[in-house]
Length: 319
Image 1 (cartoon, one colour):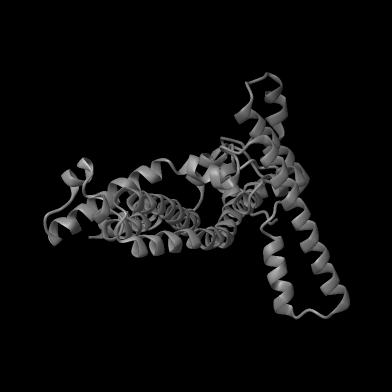
Image 2 (cartoon, helix red, strand yellow; image 1 turned 180 degrees about the vertical axis):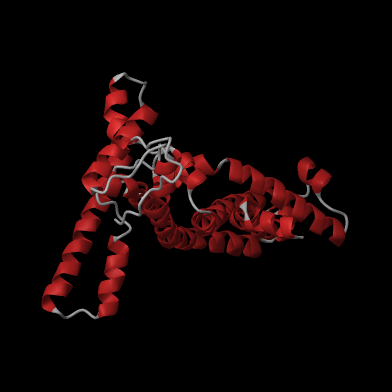
């Protein structure tokens, strides 16, 4: 029983809630709205269940299968919403410029509220929350809200410590404390849920339109279903953007805490000086991304831990 609980609380839980559950919701809408109007198609006829029990079984099996497929395709699915995939170059540049301007407007509005003292603490906090969803570096901007909300914590490690979390992600997660790692997985699950829900709504809406064109019956029901699904798309997108706040906090904790055991596992000692630590992580990142060079031997020498010291430990370093 304990092993089952551990499995549920591990990666299986993220898969179930993040991808299988929203897929089941979308399939339920499809089964009871669009599918009955597509039964004349040979594929639907072969798959259509003959009883309520069979319907439940088909729904569950389909939800698991499609959930697994979506989970496997999560990288391209995210990249489309972030603005990295299938975006023409002019649209990409326009989106980046638009969000840079939006960040400047938010920053100016927040400064005016602070200077005049007219805004309430709640208003200032909401503006700070929206402003925090943008990257610090203007060169890191993405053309979409979700892309910028994710970029802001992808750049965190490099901005603070010169630790490139994109390059060293597997090492960082592999050596981090279990609780911190679970926080990152759980926080991402919420974003996965809304992303899967969004893509599923889009697919079911298209299937509903196809059902209207194919059968030309139950038009009011199908039209209402398609309209509701399309209207919910921006809602789920905004929910995904808002859910990145917890994901960003978890990644921030992963970098602040996880870099200490990461250095220890790499046979390095964190310098007391933060500037020296930034130099060390720059070397580690270069070593991981570039071919080996002999100059790395002398460059790493000041940071190598003494392997003969069994009591060596890394002192905690704050931001």
